[in-house]
Amino acid sequence: MNGTSRRKFLSHAGAAVMLGTMQPAFAQLSATAKTRLILLGCGGGPRPWRNGYPTSHVVLVNNSAYVVDCGDGVATQLARAGVALASLRHVFITHQHSDHNADYGNLLLLAWTAGLHDRVDTWGPPPLAKMTRLFFQMNDYDIKTRIVDEGRVPLASLVHVHELTKAGMVMQDANVKVTCTLVDHPPVRPAFAFRFDSLDLSIVFSGDTRRSDALVQLARGADVLVHEVVYVPAIDRLVARVPNAATLRNSIASHHTSVEDAGRVAEAAGVKTLVLSHFVPPDDPEITDQMWIDAARSTYQGRIVMGKDLLEI
Ligand SMILES: [Zn+2]
Image (cartoon, rainbow, N blue to C red; front, side, top):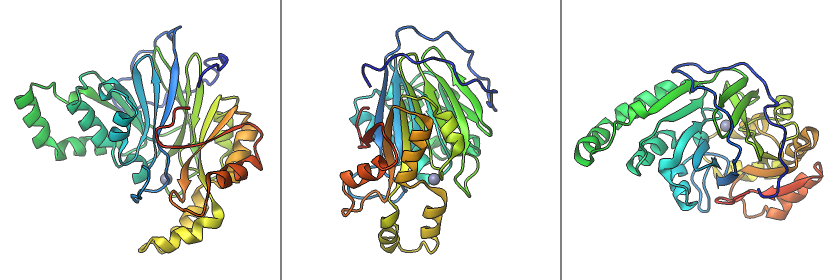
């Protein structure tokens, strides 16, 4: 996002919630930050469909990549976006649903095969540490083979896992400060929204949640809010296309946010730009872009962006 006025930084104090390995030392923020946000996957739900990918995003500051959510295809989408996989530095998982974590391990493994050799920190709810450990165990044969055959540095020791359990400070380095709040996405607990503050941009990712007052607080005054959206009149058509999911309709209705309510959250938080993403349904030809935008416009006066895979905001 170009031309954005510099926003007050460090406005969200909070307690450190890091668990696990040692947290990196806080650093002074770079005065030359130029922050970019690229949407990698904008669909909601883990089921593959014809055109598009489930949820993932990347924030880029000073050639460091901060990935938020790892839906199917995240490594491929980073490559298609022109982001060097070796620039991966931090990975954030909002919650442990497969449309947000299915390629978490693959992102680490495939970035490593693409030349990653620096430390990566990963942040998310339990059981992130177990998932990471078991993923490396599952892929032990390939990893060991490449270390010996291709002269690569060991992978597991590059990855430092931090399990998040409560709201507050997540991490800060020379590029960004990241804070989080608990959102409401039953039965998945904890589920988080993340806020990134750099010197030139503030970006909030809703994760998955029903309408959340905690998210309004986290997003207060942000430049950009990337919010999940459901087009409620289309849920019945979606459920009819998905066999073997007897309670899917109630599940969608009870723990997601309608596009109208996403607009209300953005309006209440006073954000400048609302990015619609995590579309549910992601593949209904009867819902046009204009229908999504009109529904959000009915409750929100600011700038609305229709999320698209590989779109830079
Ligand atoms: Zn979810």
